[in-house]
Structure formats: C-alpha cells, structure tokens
Image 1: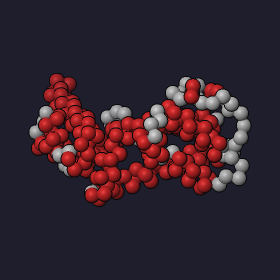
Image 2 (image 1 turned 135 degrees about the vertical axis):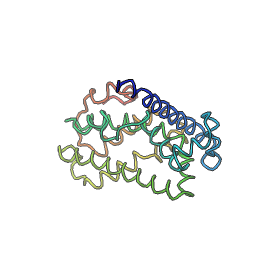
Image 3 (image 1 turned 180 degrees about the vertical axis):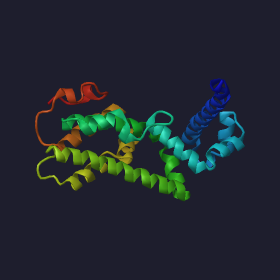
Image 4 (image 1 turned 120 degrees about the vertical axis):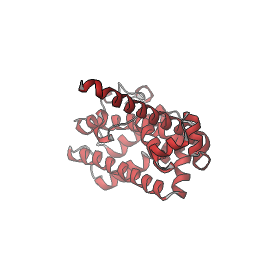
Length: 232
C-alpha cells in the first residue's frame, strides 16, 4: 500500500526534475548564443516551453540559473558529483606515475574547459555587472587553484617534481598555463584543436614540472591526444 501511495509523489518529483533539466539546457543554448543581458528569464521559459513563473520558482534569479548552467556544462551531466569525487581525479591523485597523473588531469580537465568555453563571454559580462556571479566565479577560480595545488603536493610528496622546483612556484606555473585564458587563446583565438592544446599542455607541463626521465607510453596511450605527442 505504501508503495502505491508513493508513486504519485515520485512521478511529480521526476516531472519537476525533467523540467529543471530542460530549463538548464535551454538556458545554456541561449546564454551561448545571446549573452547574459539579452537572455531573459522570459526567453528561457519560452525556449523550455514553461511559464516564466516556473523558471523563477525553480531558480529564483538569473544569476542562480547561470551558476547551475556553468556547473552542468563543466560536468557534462546534470547533478554532477564534486570534481574531487570523480573517478579520473581520484585516479590522478593516487597514480604512482607522475606523468600519468598529469596526463589524466589534462585529458579530463581540458574537456571541462571545452564545455564551458562557449559561456566565457556570458560569464565575464555577468561577473562585471552581478556581484553574485562575480563572487561565484572567484570561488571557481580559487577552487581550481586549490585542486591544482593538491596535484602538485601529490607530485612533490612522491619526489616527482623537477629538482629545485618549489611547490608554490610549480602551482603558479600550472595555474597559468592550464587556465581558461590560455585554453581560449590557443583554441578559440589561434584555432588549435582541443587535442592539440592537450598535447602541447602535456608536453610543456611535463618539462616544466616533472623530473627528467623517460616517459612511459602508457601514461597517455588511452587518451585523446596520444597520437599528437612527439616521439620521445
């Protein structure tokens, strides 16, 4: 009997979740196409085929909706787990091979950049005019640096950093080269493909961060940019 009573409530929750996801997906498309000021909650509601009141009920503000759009785009899925809990990040932080740890981080981290890249102009415009988005994006930037610092600490703890390289300096190098700005400069502005950027980043960071030693082909052989790497 309890199972029968629970079904209507479950159906309502499923419909609500489907509506939420549809709103997010439509908002992503409109933010990418039209930017932040021109993408109204009314336009998002129309694209999602729901009343504007529904959009406000679910997300309250356009800033809150943009935050969820960014989080969903970054993860490539709705309701994603935190980055630190994703399989590839756990593998990167536990791999005994520093090159493999770096290779995995680049493979999956750059994919995040690629999904968020179409929102770059929207995020910058919104951050300049909306304190909530500005605070949110600063938090994203801080979290990204903290994650990179954990990777450097793991490499340093296993004696895999280049001799004489201070971990703080290593983090600075990683943050600047492995950034949204560098990604956009080389892919959007210079026309590089995403695998080309990954291959360049892997080779550059390997030289800048890791101790000099022969690299195992196994570090990258199952990754999208392996065939673009120069023979070592």
